[in-house]
Length: 167
Image 1 (tube, one colour):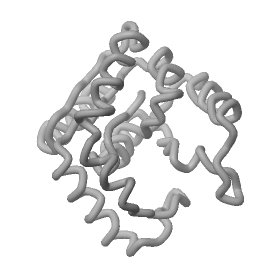
Image 2 (image 1 turned 120 degrees about the vertical axis):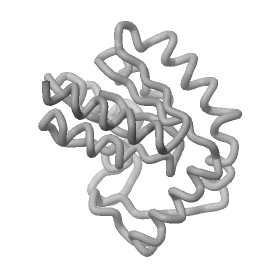
Image 3 (image 1 turned 120 degrees about the horizontal axis):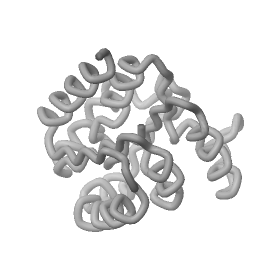
């Protein structure tokens, strides 16, 4: 299961709920993108790592990385695209910042808010979402694609998928 969307959209929250429901671990691509010394992985190693992750019988991966999104889309049975408004995502970033106090997340990734990150979030729906939709159309195949545009809808979808996983 691939969970994608803008920073602050709630990928980790939704992904954690769904991973718990199907009895697997969630993988955060931000944590996979860096080596043990916080250096970015070379593109080929990052892609190879994702190929390894999606070869498992069940998986939940949260993260964008459009350059490697086709790897996940081709193997996903479900895709959740959190296409939330910029203000909602910025509020999510602010909440995360307060939760971790600008430090390290429980998955090891450091919380960094830069001006370029804020402008990326502000322009995500205009600049990145069309690219993501095109990648979904091209690579998602038979996967069930869920496009969610509000936190309420995200919670409702997570609840529905949790119920379906239990039956």
